[in-house]
Image (cartoon, rainbow, N blue to C red):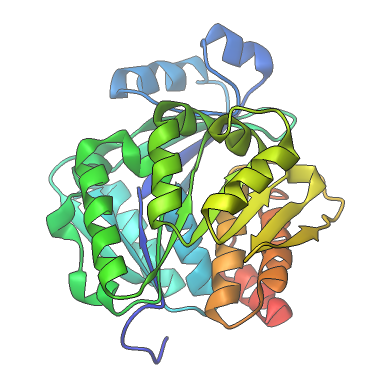
Length: 330
C-alpha cells in the first residue's frame, strides 16, 4: 500500500478490544464508576460489569488509544507502524486482521495470555467511561521495540496510558532514547485526567525535557498546572514545549507552535459517542504534519476528524470513510 520502506509514524500503545455498552448516570453510580475516565480493572470486575448489563446490547470494536490513532493515520495515507502486544486468541486475531485491513505496518507481538479489552459505557450525553483490563498489553517491554524502524521514522507517538505498568514505561523510556539519538520527533498525548493525576510531575518533566508535540484536553491541562484558568495553563504549557494541541470539545481547539497561537473553531455536531475523539484528533494532526501541512491546517484537520468519530458508535472510523476524508483533507 505504501512506497516508503520505513514508517513515518512509529506508534506504541495498547491494542484493546472495546466492548461498547449504552448506559446511564444511575448505572455508573450503582457500579461506583467515575464518569468520563479510564480505570484499570481485573477480569473479575469486568465480568461483574458485563453481568450487570446482560439486557443491553454489547458491541465489539478493535480499539486502544494509540492504535486507534495509528490505524487512522494509515487510512489517511500515511505509512504508520503500531507496536504492542496481543494474546494468541480470537480477539488477538481480530486485531491483527484490522491492522492488515487498514494497511498499517504491524509491530504487534502475540503472547500466550489474553488480549486486553475495555468495557466502554456510553451515557446519553455521549460521554464514555472505560473499564480496562490490559491483558497481554502490560507485557510489552523494551526488547519488543523494532529499533531499526523506530530510528528511521519521522515521529514517535505514545500516550500517558503507557505509564500504567512498569514494563511499558521502561519500553517508552528506551523508545524516547532511540528517537532522540536519531532526530525523531516525539509526540505525546497525556491521555486521561486520572492518568495525569497519577503522574502529574512525571508528565510535566517528560514534556519539558523530551517532548516535541503534546496533546491534552481542557481538564487534563488544568490538572497538569493545578489551575482552573485555561489561558494560564495554555501559556504555561507553551513555555515548556514548542508545539501542542489542546482539545476543547464543543469549543474546538487551541494549537500552538513556536509561540504562535491558533484558535480552531468547531462545527456543530451531535455527539453519539465521544470514544476515540482524542485519538482521531491526534491522527488528523499527525497525518497533516507528516504530509507537510502547517500547524494551523493540522489543527483544523484534527478537529474535523474528531467531529466525525463522535457521530458514530465506537472509536474507529471505517476504512472506506476515512480514505474519502483523506481526499477532502489533503
